[in-house]
Amino acid sequence: MSTGTLIAIIVPVAVVLILAAAVLWYLSRRRRLRQQFGPEYDRAVRRSGNRLSAERELREREQRHEQLRIKPLPPDTRQQYAEDWTRVQQEFVDRPGEAVQRADRLVTLLMHDRGYPTEDYEQRLRDLSVEHGQTLEHYRVAHAINAEARRDNATTEELRGAMVHYRALFSELLDGNEPRGRGTATEGG
Image (tube, rainbow, N blue to C red; front, side, top):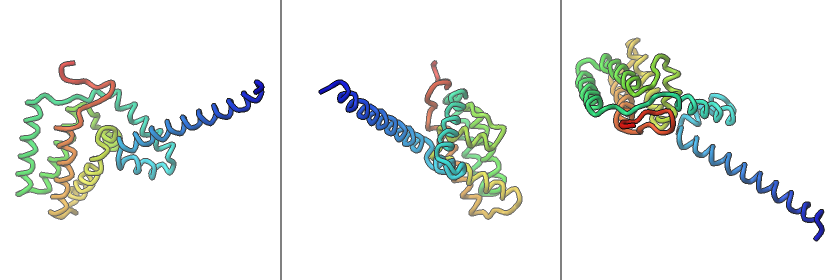
């Protein structure tokens, strides 16, 4: 076989292999983003109208999240939060609207103590989506019900639902999903 024939065979094969590797890399990155962000991935795609720009936004969220100082809570602080949550649930019996507002404040305070910035609700959603994408919709629903409750437009059953939704994120922030990746602080180093 001549050198020209070998080149004519090797170059297209190499190009096909490189393209196949690029496609596999892209698909694995997309799969990782889908698994990590859960429903938030689909929400980002719908909002942007473009899968590539949505994925770019999600990667930007990851980069911002790496810069945050997310940390686990000391056991005594975790215990105090658990007790505070129990009190909020007990308050629900007599004052459901106030209990939901306290639940919102407690979740926000817990986020803050874990190291999440809490000044802006939309930014909280973006920051939480990196580690808590599977439960983020609970937070959205609870927050919306809480807003309705402040206008006296929420039923007791809706308020009960808000407490359940807040509890999902509260539990995950308190007990689950320890921080991962660079830029996070951990106990003992």
